[in-house]
Amino acid sequence: MSFDPDAVHRTLRKAWSLSTASQWTASNPAAGQCNVTSLLIHELFGGDLLKTPLPAGDHFYNRIDGKRYDFTASQFDQPIAYVDLPASRAEAELGATEHELAELRTAFEERSASSG
Image (cartoon, rainbow, N blue to C red):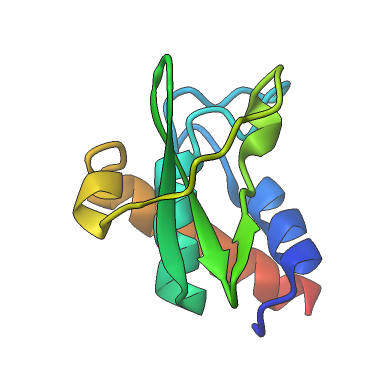
């Protein structure tokens, strides 16, 4: 899959589940998905991992070709005041298990194969 942000977002929404983040709900599928999603996007499409501190903890997202992509922003009721601090994979991994990442990778690959 080439990096088409709209297609990636649609595929992520279908791939997220309780297996990919324990905060997931049908009414808020992006809830708790920022760590695992940013890790997968970084793995598949490169770019940079970024974070913004929020009251509940660091929020992770990506920058690809100089542009910010936050595929999980919809989990929040208020807009985020991004500060785009560089983040490491190790930092993002603190909020996602290897099992969650494997689940998201598999679900993402299955859904992108069936839609393309």
